[in-house]
Length: 230
Image 1 (spheres, rainbow, N blue to C red):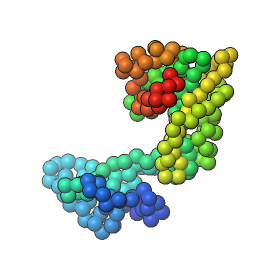
Image 2 (spheres, rainbow, N blue to C red):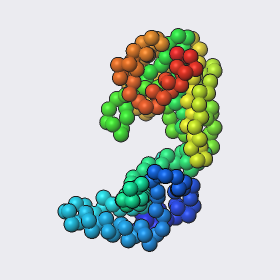
Image 3 (tube, helix red, strand yellow):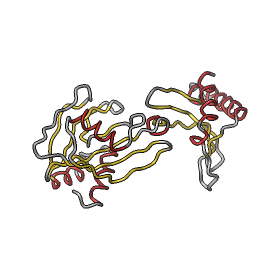
Image 4 (spheres, rainbow, N blue to C red):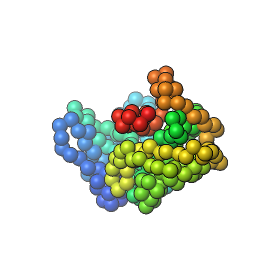
């Protein structure tokens, strides 16, 4: 019940996170406490009869920390079916006015790729530098902070490619120019094992071959191509 108590509190404090537009085809979040309790019991009974764990349909705030809320909402699908649906909410861009950033770092005619360990995949990923938002830092301030922490350089110029609002914060993509004499110094404790500079042609081949698989990096690459920057 503790997870539900926190969940109901969040509904009252942040109704924007539970907004239903009423548009056709929408997956509607059910927020009425009595209905949540009754539907959850019904779903638990169904799972129990199938010999499956009943906690699979626990509705509420399943986990929280500084960075994320993990919620399982009770939702009504367009066909009328009712069930639980998990979502992960980035607190940095939805709670404390932070701006996540993705950075295409360019030095003359070459682009920086870093080899980053991704805990969620338990594997290494070649990608562009990026990072979570920080409380009350605007997008450019956080971009400079992330570059200093991850690769030890300061951009000579930052070009904003896009900024997508997310409640009180958002996510921004930057094209960052680095002076020719600046050397990369990988941040200790950032989970980065290596880096490499690639030409614009090599980067295109890297994307085509599927070696750039990080979705944020692919998004940033697409924006840079649209702006004829790479």
